[in-house]
Every structure is written in C-alpha cells, then in structure tokens.
Length: 141
Ligand SMILES: [Zn+2]
Ligand SMILES: [Zn+2]
Image 1 (tube, rainbow, N blue to C red):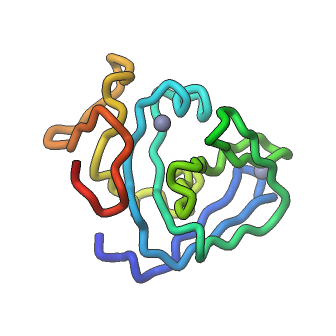
Image 2 (cartoon, rainbow, N blue to C red):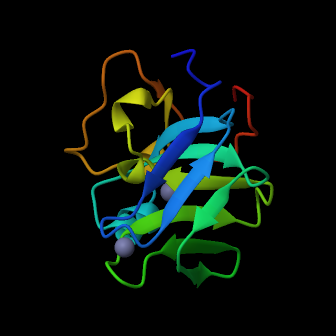
C-alpha cells in the first residue's frame, strides 16, 4: 500500500482499450451483488473506485446500460468488462481489477452486498463485511 501516488493503469485482453488514472483511489472493494456477478460472469467482482476526473481512456469501447442508473463499459473487440458506473455515485468510476496491469497492487479493504454472496466465494479472515453498498468514499458505515 502507500502506492497511491503512482498512476494506475490497465486495459482489456486484446489491447484495444487502455486506461490510466493518476489516483488517488476512492474505494477498493469486492462486490457480491447479483448484478456484478452477471456483469463480469464471475462469482463476485473486485473493483477499484476512482474519481471520474483523471481517468484517461484510449481506444474504442462501449457502455452497456443494464439498469436505469447503472452502466458497464466493455471492449467490443474482445468483450473484456472494464468498468462499472452508477448515477448514485456520478463522480466515481469503478474499474474492474482484472484489467489492472499490476493487479497485485490492489488490496480490497471491504466486501459489500454480502447478503447476495455465493456460499463458495472466499472471504479472507479479518475482512470488513457490509450488507449494503451505499458507502460514500472514505466513509465507514
Ligand atoms: Zn479488447
Ligand atoms: Zn455489485
């Protein structure tokens, strides 16, 4: 940790979409909600919250609006899911950690929407668990 001064960077599987952000992050969490599970086609999603301001995207991407207030960005060439956005947090973008160039740099500090967690999803000892998601950046519910 303590590496927030360094730029974050990532991209999709085929390299069509690249992203960078100067930081600092707003949140880093694992989300267990049904929408994320389907949205990334995995048991849960790991996301890095960042201010929209500062995000630099290169390439060609699409946004899929899957609920009235939420959308997911993806690469139309390879299908990699890149980010999640919600009108509930209009100033944040949640980048999918699997797209990071250095995913080991990311250490999630909380699990959210735990009521929808699949029983086999691992939860490391000592993790913060939250039933909801509506936590403002930097806030502890
Ligand atoms: Zn791609
Ligand atoms: Zn979710």
